[in-house]
Image 1 (cartoon, helix red, strand yellow):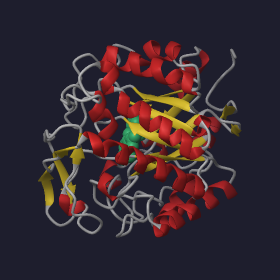
Image 2: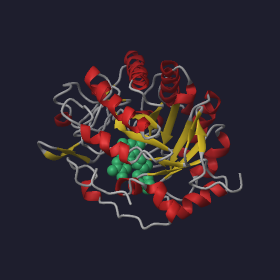
Image 3: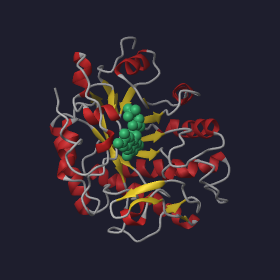
Length: 356
Ligand SMILES: Cc1cc2nc3c(=O)[nH]c(=O)nc-3n(C[C@H](O)[C@H](O)[C@H](O)COP(=O)(O)O)c2cc1C
């Protein structure tokens, strides 16, 4: 397709997308007590329904996967019902949306989970993440010390992802994305500095990718089709104190293993220009390829035209430009995003950026 650009319609899992622009998953910290999405989130997502595909903010499969203040889950009937209102409203505007499942693993603080669980954080190994995290009651705090998951507990964690996938489909989502990026639980299994296990989930690269592969298989079963399941990875991204001794080996092995599964898409967040994981991983993956990380209209169009990707993911630009596709179509000016309100409660910086 030589003329492919951001505004060309696309296709994911048997549904058409009206353009090639994906709204990136973005945690916005506006959920209600009990990890329930708020009414404001209905307006926020509906305002952005003209994206070819919306991927929601990171959402915990179960309470033990929560680590940040005011973030949602999709486990209880109240949470599922609140999500259903969002999918109904976005669908009514002709939009499409995937739920992002995010389990924090070792990133988090007890104060952010106190209402929903007293359990410790869980991780592949009991290694505390360097760095601090915001809590509403105690301000900045060191990440808590996690405990290592027992081998016998891992099927239970994977089952939480499967249950949350069924819940997401029941809530009307078009599909579900596994968040295997940014230093959270699945990436903690993939990476050598966070995974020092000696069982079948640690050590060799084949063992380190096992958690992700088994989770995708379980999510596929729960959704009834692999074409409703996507995955996000961020090879070599150091965020959240994560580090892998050989990310090229880890991610080429992972992508080769999941390519035959028939997933909805592979979403790659590239955090540094060299080496290009887009160039490295695209030929290894049979399905749709979504590229993200610092794209503009110009670089997005160029990546599509050159065949480097099938979809381009935009994060920060969608926070301040709810009608980003229309602005690109018209060559209209873009509103600057406001990092001060990314994670603050309330409508300011969330639902008050106007469309043209
Ligand atoms: C406010 C904010 C919250 C984010 N939350 C998440 C998240 O919950 N899950 C995730 O996978 N990525 C998250 N990201 C990363 C984005 O999905 C995206 O990969 C990143 O912003 C790079 O794209 P951009 O340069 O177009 O913004 C977040 C980014 C921002 C700015």
